[in-house]
Length: 485
Image 1 (cartoon, rainbow, N blue to C red):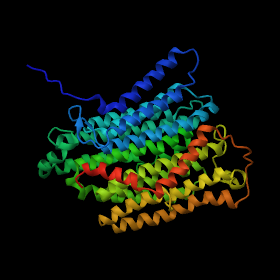
Image 2: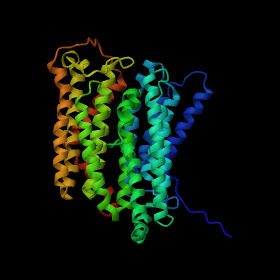
Image 3: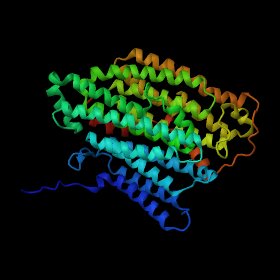
């Protein structure tokens, strides 16, 4: 009996290896040092830069590696770059924030790198078990990050809720994969599933639909779609603010990108079934997120419900299921990363040591006390509301245009109405900053170099990416040609 070892290239998973080795090295370095290594954040950023360069080499490629288990293509590369951007910006936010809590620990940065690695495994997975493996690597790291402030009861509560509900959703997702495995005659490769399911559809359609429904539930939890959103407000509020920013952008980006590939590659023959299911989820998610956000006075909870609403807009893109929708989703994920991280950078500067000022009325008079900070926060609020010329407007434009192109006119009408509702609670922050007298004496703001740079860079990028969207559109359009839509 001969043993055949498949050929593979380590360059195909270069970003995974870089971040994994860096995370392990950080843990070993910390264990062997008598004092906490001060250069850990810089080392983490260096690893992310190297991973970004490695990701750029994947642009223009098409195919799989490691016996068909891993995709190597432009879509994967762009998803990598968005995830790396989210992780890097989170590190800039974390440095000073953790020092204020006395928690600037090396394991925090190692967990961020491990979580990002898990996300990369998810978006590159060409086999459902690879996707599940990446999901678990990401989830376990994020569970710990959510409860990183161990002395804080809210942080403990956030970690426990996320852990329990996350475990349930992972089990449901795995059960759905098992049903699909049985219905497809013993394969979980994404490329093969569409062909296998088409052959067995007549006999196993109920089993396929049940398995697909469970997969939707599993991804719906990670995306924070209604009715699988119940964990989001409490976890976002209780987790450290820097972790909340990371969860809001990176976890959502990884889940949406993976969900897109699974639906578009493996289940195109069942589009008539899952598009209407996602249609209903999109409407419910947008509506609940925007309506409930109006009643929030804690700004982290407001952004949690805002995140739910934005998940609804992304689901509109999934429903459209065409090339423009795939491009729009990638663009929206980039825009959402920039404007959400920027908003949390502003929150960190306003909330001060140990998150003392998180009520929206603490922002009253900010325009007079700190005009630069208020201007940047206004840019992010305008972008999240989808107002031109910001990246948030262009992202919604692409997704809504894709849905119109696919014939979902009423879905777009409902999405536009929801966007109008969101304008109220986003612009309320701007009104409080400029048109209400100060209710809290914030005093001088400690503009640390890292957070200030993040705030300025994201505010500028949100505007420039909105005014000049063509360069990213071209990259995204080339990367989604792998989907036969």
